[in-house]
Amino acid sequence: MIVRTTDEITGTERDIASEDGQWRSKRIVLGGDRVGFSFHETTIEPNTVNNFHYANHVEAVWLIEGEGTLTDRETGETYPLGPGSMYLLNGHERHTVETTTRMRMLCVFNPPVVGDERHDENGVYPLIEVPA
Image 1 (cartoon, rainbow, N blue to C red):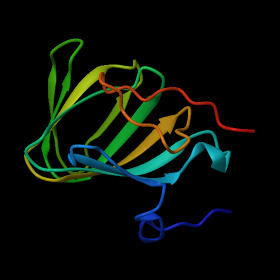
Image 2: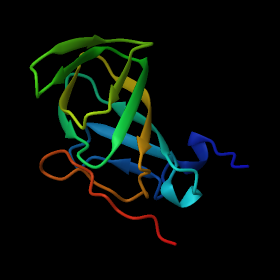
Image 3: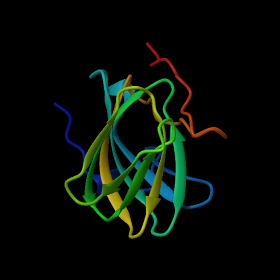
């Protein structure tokens, strides 16, 4: 059994912020936990535009606080986001999250993130194998 709180991982190697300060990811469950997925609490600051593309991961996102929009950059389709919204990037879609208020979301990644991944210039996390 694993029990963790976001308070205990704040300020550790599991607490990753973007270089520009627009988002922060508290990585509660990582690949090294050997459960087949990673689980993160992510916050995105208000009035920001964030381009992402998880070419190597499937991501499920459940928004618990905040508002904004999600744009599928493949189709141009835009979706409103608010508390209770869920989106699943099961086709590795390039997407943009634009916030009007601070967003707080819970995210699941498969395959799991190992912990120190950073978005590259295209918003992609590299695929890093979980060490044995």
